[in-house]
Length: 151
Image 1: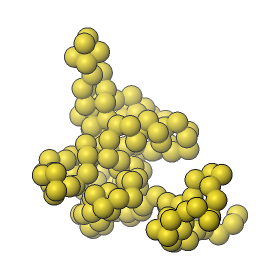
Image 2: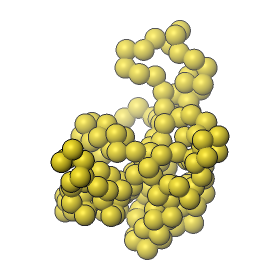
Image 3: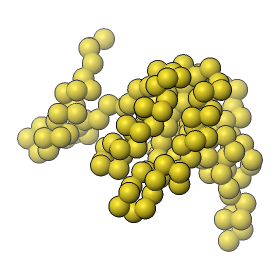
């Protein structure tokens, strides 16, 4: 109960935080020119576990879902647009799960941010150890679309 009272949302990125500004937003070692947009704090935790991403985050607080009565106004989209338009952000990475709601949110947010900066989306594809023969057509198509040249 006490932990629930102490934890709130970061005033910058809306990630869960016991402080007004979270540890990631305060960190001088994080790249301030890159912002990764995610649906919720669990996504931040998952990305942090990879130790690959070194930028900052923005948590939307959900996905656009008209069927559930969730529109853009119920999410942290306006603060994101304000943040990106006011700061010199080089790239916004949309790391939102592929689903009808996720794709809708990605398209909506992407269109709002394109006038201000470069907007990219994470690639989707096959999990490690996954067999091609068991993958669905959409996953295979996305894996082909997200391919990149060998280094």
